[in-house]
Length: 306
Length: 288
Image: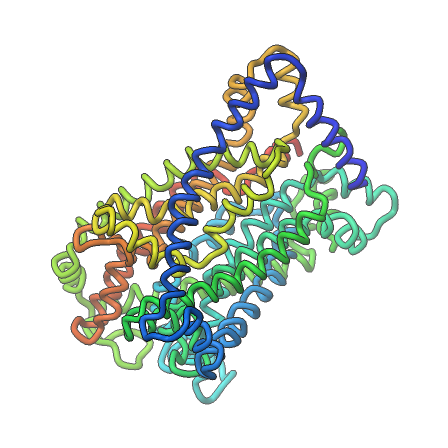
């Protein structure tokens, strides 16, 4: 079914480009629409990044042009920051996806208080990681309401340690990134034509089959987008790891290493090198995810009737 | 997965009973309740603490006061900070939509040489962590004497904001039926008319959602603001960050008071926006 629809959408595209002056006018208009974005990204992103790369290849502390990179990968403590960050970002992202996929699927239909629920889920995003971390320090602390409630309900005798360790950072990242994942998936789930599912139902597909064979494949581009964006953001965040984790130990994330190089050792060259390494890892992950995504169907799932 | 069945029944019988008794519904509401409790707990912990004269280990503080708010207004120049925050957020949203929405349309609908490269280029600023490009960007802006004031903060915040608008808008536009544009064109509409009269109204929910998300992201973005802000161009988040990291000097309650001001500002803006729009309202839903 997906293949057929893809065919019809390319057909539409070619019909849109009709012969005559309209092609030129439309092409000029399109050029005008996209050029500002491209120029802005070149001037404010690519150029500064190249500047940073050059800075990282000119070590402040001496040595060859690759001295900063050599130091990062030979120093046990620096190298470990990559794994430390992955161990925070990956669980948080996967938890969010596992919760958000069924929830978005369920909520794409009319649900009582849908607007209120959406608002509730979006609130953490307005709070920001710094604020969530600060609130969590008191709420999840040993004398905070969370542990008080657990003890009151006799679930635990001693307070559970939920701050100043990896768990605390994962919880905060999960709360902070959930809205992004959820809204992206809800957008994709709501865009799927309900007729596709009804047709499958009439043809005898069970509830699980409809979800597995119709909805899930159509949601895969959304899932990939949500995973990529969420992973990027959790990989970049460092105030949370500092405030809620063990910045000297298990949650010494790569961004914190870069921050320490710049603001504690004032070695901007080394800081740039770490930042470039961080960027390379991000780009690798995203290249894989979006590369796979572009191979999938991503036409209009709503135009079932054609 | 009895959701669609219950949905069908609901349409037929007109009652909401089946929804309340389906297991997926119970699970959903249980999760929502759990999430609400967490958010509420975090929110109220900060709120109660900001009004506490002192709070040691009990369920509630030992006494209440509002002095931390007047303290925050004076100590952190709250009014100026709030004004700067609003100016920065609104300007960044407006510019991002202006640049991002047209670009998203072209990328969603048209095929052209180098499209993959353009897409990659526009995706990069949100793929790369702000700290990566923030340090060189800030030094570049300082070199041209732009950083250290509100303009510099706006420019730096624009870098991840407009590509984010593009990323959010592409799927929205992809989901608009291309036949509508074709029909308008066949009925004699010029390309500009197609954009203004057909696409824009259909994309409005997406544009508002993108704008909303960009707004809250900009308000919460502290890395880039931290790197480019001068003494008089701090936003609320940066101001709070400085307060939190000078915790030894100032009482914790005054920091929590700042946090409450920030939370209330951001949440009010968001809930206000949500009252008028649904962030995921898409054309298909109207058809259902």
